[in-house]
Image 1 (cartoon, chains in turn cyan, green):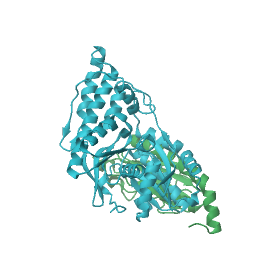
Image 2 (cartoon, chains in turn cyan, yellow):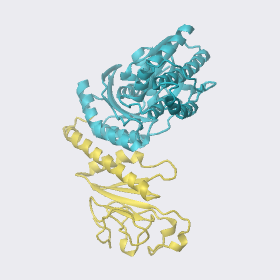
Image 3 (tube, helix red, strand yellow):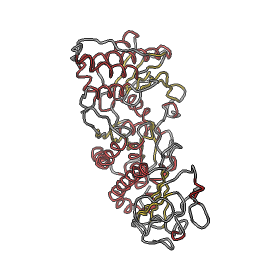
Image 4 (cartoon, chains in turn orange, brown):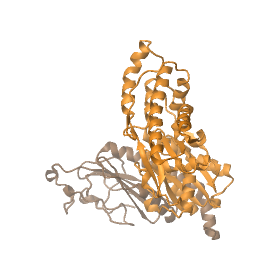
Length: 335
Length: 173
C-alpha cells in the first residue's frame, strides 16, 4: 500500500498532499492573493511558496498521521507553470527525497488534474475539459497518451477572467474567478461580446481586448452594470468551451465529460456543460473546489499511478519545465 | 580559503575590467568578477576543488596568458558579470546534498538574459558561481539563490537529525 507525498506550486496556489491507494489522507493548501487590480508575479509567488512550504509539509504529515518512513515516494510538479514557483517547490521535493531516501517522480500538472478527477468522480474514459488560469484544453485518452483535441490558441480562459477582474478591480480573494461568478449571478443584461471558436480550438485574447476597451465606457454611460459584464463574459466564454467539448465528444464517440481545473469549480460552467451532456445522453463529472483548484493531492495521486507503473525521475532529470505538454507523457499506467 | 596572491577580496557586486575584487577571500564570503576572465596578475585563481573558487571560464576577449584584458580587441564581445559565493556546511555530506538539489536547475534554457549557475563542492564547502550578461539579471538571481539556500538550510535543519539517526541505526531503506 504505497503512500505518496505530492508537492504542487506551479502558480499562486501551493499545496502538499498525501495519497495512499486511492485515498486522500491530507491536502493542505495556501493561496498567494494579490491586491485588487494586480496579478501575481513569479518572484513574489516563489517567495510566498518558500515561506509556507515547510509548514504545509508538517501539516500534511500530521493530518495524514504518517511519518517520513511511511512515505514511499515523493512526487512534485515538473511543469507546466511559472518558472520561479516551480523551482522553489522542486528544490524542496528533491531535498526531502534525499533526506528520506525516497524515489522522486516528476508529474505533469495537467495529468495531475486528470488523474485526480478520475479518482474522485470514478469516470472511466471521459472527454476532459481542463480549464484553469494557465491552461485550456480538451483532452481524451488514446493509446497511452492524453491527446489534446482542442485548446486555446492564445490565453487560457481563467487568464481571461482574471485579467478582466483586474480591469474592474474585483477582489482576488479568494480568487477573481469566484468573485466574477458571484457578480454574474446578479447580472441581468447580456452584452454581445466576440465569440471566437476556430474548429476544435478557441481564442480568448480578442474577447478580453474588447471587454477591456468597452468596459469603462459602458459603465460610465450606464449602459450596463459590472454584474452584467461579468454575466456576459461568462456566458460567452463558457459557451465557447461547451462547443469545443461537444465537438470532441462527437469526434471520439464519448459518453462522459469531466471538467477539471480551477475554472471547473464554476457552477454556471457546470450547468451549461450538463445541459449539453443531457442533450447528447452523456454523463457529466466534476469535482469540488478541494480538487478542482490546484492542490498537492492531485500531484500525489498522479505520482502514485506513475510510481506503481515504475516511473522514477533521477535527480539529474528533476529540473522543471515551464512548457510541458499534456501529450508528452507516456501514460503507462492505463491500458 | 584564499586564492594565491589574493588581496582582501570578498566584496559583493561586479567589477569592470581587470583589477576588480576578484575571487572570494574565504569561507562564507561572496565575490564578484566582470568580463568572465582572469582579473589580473594579482588575482590568480586555483582551479578545481580544494583550491578556492572554481576557475572562471575564459571569455575570448580576456583570455590573454598574462591575465590582462585586451579591451581593444573586445569590440562587440559580450561582457559578463559574475558573483561567487562560498558556503560552508557542517559536513561534506550536507554540502554535496545541497549541490545535488540545486544543480538540476543550473542549466538555463538558451535564451538572452539567462543566468548561468555553477555548483561545485570541495570538502564541506559549496561553491556557487552566477554568471549573467547584465547587472540586473545577476541581482535578481542572487536574491533568488540566497532565498533558496536559506530554505534548504531550514529543511536540512528540520529533517537532518532524523536522517542521521536512521543512517546510524542502519534503518535507511
